[in-house]
Length: 128
Image (tube, rainbow, N blue to C red; front, top):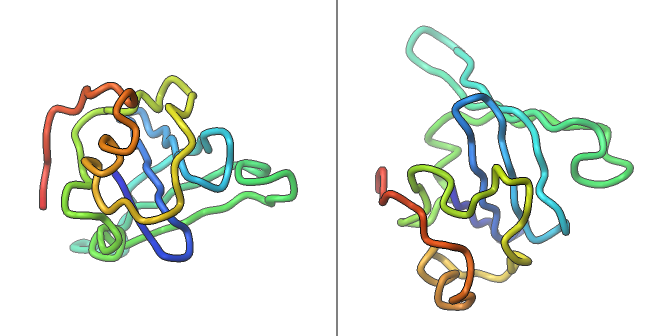
């Protein structure tokens, strides 16, 4: 999933079926690895929670947990920001390149700016 927020810039996160989360963003030179799960708020409403261990974002980071209702989570997702699979191969633990903070609003913009990377392995759009 590709998120863009004026304060945080671009973020791309792969949420693996085994509960691992691989967050790639412009504020660090390495992937931030954590876990994710869907938790129930009520019988009809759930939220997606991401947990990152101490030191994940910086040396003095105490660890973080972020939970979002689905509507709030996808609010900052560009129109083509949800892809099937791991098109940037983030589960390898490596960033394909330094992710820019400024606003490319789509994955196509990223591919145009960085034509040699990442390898195109996405299966296509899931939604939006």
